[in-house]
Image (cartoon, rainbow, N blue to C red):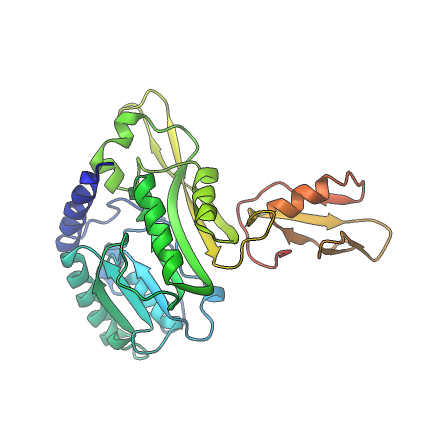
Length: 324
């Protein structure tokens, strides 16, 4: 499969590093307001991500963090807020100009954040397809609006690399556009649109399956938001194409015999006459206490055909506390 489109991507982001382009491809990354965290304006202007990969519940105990595709360095700084140690955060990028721009922004952040040292962040040149990182050395790996650029062969390779470098029970945090409409070939083959995080979007179920195929035993869909519209006036499409952004956490834990535990925001509520219901599979549902359940557990509970257990539909916002 041709990878010429990757060179187009490098050129676009070389230009974006030298001349920041607000909203170049992505528009929905939260600017977290954390005590004592000051994000330089130029970092924000070079925020080429969708959604966020920074979540405090992933970042306890000074984790070793890997971030692929550094952008202006904003999420590197946010990760360093939770991992205040030398080289606690490693940023990888293939574009020299982006690395240099991020380095300058990090030095600016050092001047306005008394708690922060630029030594907390180590920048390395490297390719997402062959990461310059040792096996099982990373607690949290993340990428924001990068992997959707890849075609399937390269996407699988990039995910395998993330899996390789993660420690057992390590977490892979991803934020990418997804699309339930079949993308026209003319758009999929448009190298610039792919580089701009648009035409590489695939259906969420396909995205999740590829992640689970790599070996991640637990997958959490944490957020799903409207993102962009591709219309016939501006793009080579005969129908309106709705793109969403999704935030996913994949945990490198053992794969269950019956397949991965995938959390999409479903909840089970037992409302029977007993104090609790035990499904004999490790799940206790206490009376009128909602329990977040993975899709697999939801299906198993529904198959019991009980009239005292309610199963909600997927909300696509999972916030922990699940059954597994």
